[in-house]
Every structure is written in C-alpha cells, then in structure tokens.
Length: 550
Image (spheres, one colour):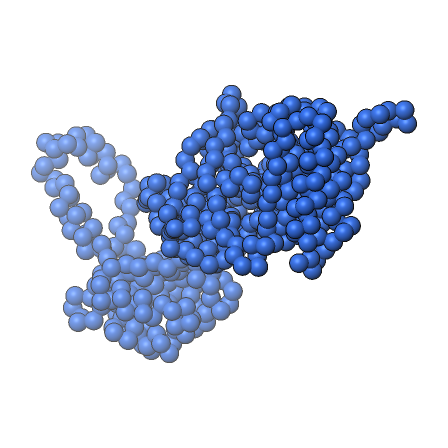
C-alpha cells in the first residue's frame, strides 16, 4: 500500500499547500511589499531553516501520537493503517481486511454505520465517550479522506482516551442521583402518608417529582380536619430545589398544621406563616393557598400568598376561577393578606395545584390555567380519577422538568340512604329564661327523630344544654343552636355575638359556675371554639357514632 498517497490527501493538505505557494515572496519583490527587505534578509540569512509539514515523515508522526488512529478506505472500509496506540489498545489488525471482520471493536461500538455516513456525506462526525469492551472510554472522530486518483475515498478514525473524564462524570452523576434520591425521600416523608378523610368531602392528591435530571422541589399539600365538620386544605410550593427546599417545605407544613389548630381565618394563618417563612430563610420564599371548607355554609373560604388560583367546577360543569384576593408569596413581609370565598355546594369539585402542572417554557401561564380549566370541565369520576386525568391532560410524564402536586376535593351530592345519614337542624335562640328549656326540648326531639340510641341521645341533649347555658351567661345575641349528623359523628354547635373564647378551667368546690365546658369536654369526643367571620364565636363538640347506627 502506498501510504504516502493517502497521507498527502488528508483534508486541507492540498489547500494549505496551495496557499503557501500563493504567498511565497519572490526574490525580486522583496522590499516593495508589506515585509521590509532588511527583515526578509534577516529571515533568510540568520534564521535556521525549519522543515515544512509536508516534509515530515507522516507515518512516524502518527505512530507516536498517543491517540488511536486508523485509516480505512473503500465502501467496505478496508484497513489501510493503524498506529501503534491503536495496536496497543486492540491488538494487531491485518492491513487490507474489511473493518467488519478486522475491526470488531468498531462494530461493537456501532461505528460502522457512522463510517458509511462519513464516506457518503464527506463530512466529519464525532461520537463522545463510547466505552470499549476493555473498559476504556474513547471519543471517536471520523474524518473523510479524499483520494482523487482513486474512485474510492477513505475515512480517518481518530480516538482520544477520555476514560478519566468519563469516570469523573459518572461519579458526579452518581453523586447527583444520590442527592436527588435523598431529597425525594425527604420530600415524600414530609408529605402526608395518608390523607385525612373528612365526613363531608372526598379527597385525593398526587405528587410527582421532576425527572431524573431535575432536582426535587418543595411542593407540598395537606388536609387537616378542624372539628365541628370543618376541613382545612393547603397546597404550597417552596422556591428552589434540593434538600434545602424540601426541608423548608417540611417546616412550613408543620407550622400550617399547628396554626390550623387555632382555627383562625385563612388570611390570619397566612399572616403567621409569612413571618415564620422570613425567620426560616430570608432568601427563600414560598407560595401557598390555605382554604377552609364549612359544610354548613356550602363555601370554600381561602387566602392565597402568590399561589395559582383555585379552580371549582359546579354540578352543572361550569368552572369558576378564584383569582382574588391574592397577596405576595410568603417570606416577603409587609403585606396584609385577605380572605375570599368561592361556592362549593353539593356536586362541586375543587382543584388546588402547583405551577408544575400548568407552567411551560413555551406557553403563557394563563394559557396553561385555561387548558387545565377545560380539562376539569370534562373530568368526572372519583377524586383520584379526576386527579389522574388532569395530570395526563397536562402532559406530565416521568421526565417532566418540574415537580407537580395536585389536590382534588369533591363535595358529593348525597341522595337516598346517604342523605339520611347527613342531616342538619338549627334553632334561633332569642334569649331569656325560656331559651335553655327550648334548646333542650329541640335537641331531644331532633336526636329522637334521628333514631340515636338512648345513651347518645342523652349525652347530646346534655351537651346542647351546657353550651346554650354558657352562651346565655357569657355571650350576646344573636344566638343559634345547630345540630348536625354525618355517617360518623354528631356535632353540637352554639354561636353567639360575643368574640370571647371560652376555656376549660378547674372549678373550685365553692364555685357556682365554670363547670359547663369541663362537663362538655368530659362527655364529648372532642370540643373547640373559634371566632366567626362576621364577629362573635362558635363553640362546638363532637360525639363519635356507633359504626352501624341507622
């Protein structure tokens, strides 16, 4: 094989030789061009002659190159040359044999189709960090070689050992995977393992972390039963990613549960969270929606700190977008949050979600929310079915680039036997000495009509009597007694116009008052009090029903 013929026609060789010929300075023109004559004479007379590249022994140069070099020619890529580094890496390769038989390492790496492509297109191609059977990693560059006096061209294969870089990159990827798995584990452990199940709502939620290349974020959700038939729902998103965002999320979620037990209005809960978020990390902010459902009101009271609007579909399929009021994210400070409300009657479905469900780089955020609204209008079934359909309609897959959290709640329209298990009765108390006897008689009649067993009937009447007596003594009009039953519990609630919340205390033997709340707390499963939005307070207690009560 004439290796000189091949090496002289490597890409660019002829062009560089022609360029040097055109720019050679002739002896009779020295001094009248851009190079002074004296300088030209100095270059000629004083400087030692440097051999041109074309005069170097190419084979000797390639044999000493630490990279792997192979030269093949023809449509079947017959071996024309392999250098010493290639031979040391893969062994001796017979010259003149086709690459498919003589270069099995290239076949195993899938490079033979690449050689065909380079030969056809006359364009160089590079594949990065391919691992060979021997365990070393190489980056291969295949360059076309012209052979104008031969109908067949060739391909120069140049491979650089990148094993150290590949191993370092793999260690980095393993470390990132480990950190991500730690963050995901932390994130999932901080989310509720099982959602609380309110009597009047059906709820489902889903959380999906970002794809394997994305660090986990700080999305969270929670469901908190407040007592008296009321339920708090919260969803939020901590800005940032990784373990830090997940840790901040966990602190905020714990704080929300603690503040929710105070049974405060939604905007007051967000006000407390705002101060806490600034104390946790002044550089990390979070968005959040906190909502409270009261089955007696048929509405969802909510407050938003920079979060996306709640979507509510009514029983006719119309979707309402609860945009206002919305304050800045938590941690910014200096803002007074406000509460709003949206109807959530029987047959309605509400959706709370994070931005990963609707935000896309190539789409306006409002377009994503509008698309979610359309998907919700046509999504029927159980909350979990609705949840899954919304996630699918948004195109969320395993390699999604952002975390997604969705919380779906339904207020079912109950008919038939279920409607008998969910009943309400209320009595306006006008005050005076006759109010207490009227309240006892009302409670006794209602509980009898609901066919409660005698023991539960008597406990319910006693609780109603004590709460009404406490309200008559310490409260102000208007006053109301409300009885409510679900399939799990009996709720007794008294409201009045005074906002002083009662507390349980130990009554001394000589005291004539102060035992009413203590009696209620003793006989009931739980009790509590809260301030009502229009001023005043509500005091309630609950009794667990026997499992098979008719």
